[in-house]
Image (cartoon, rainbow, N blue to C red; front, side, top):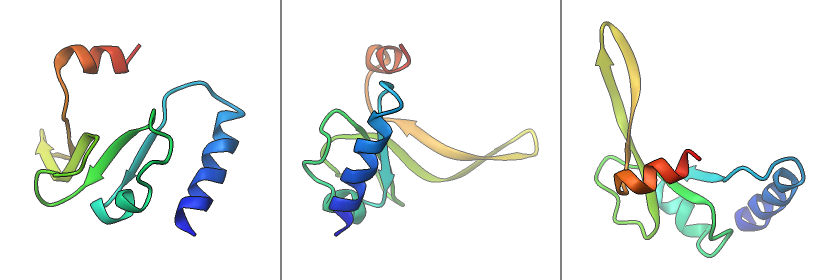
Length: 87
């Protein structure tokens, strides 16, 4: 059910943009979407380093700097891959 709904949403998004997509969720939720839109990067929300195939980003809590709390996110690839993702 979740996979079908996300697939329909992706199809709708693709009508409006050619920009890369990122699927964000827990390892369990992303596991249910396995095989769906292989070009979309995966953003894993997890308390520990993800052991999730294809994890491009890892979100774990917050980071406080200069009195402001920011969501702590790590890119799981190389510098070259990060640069390419921004193009």
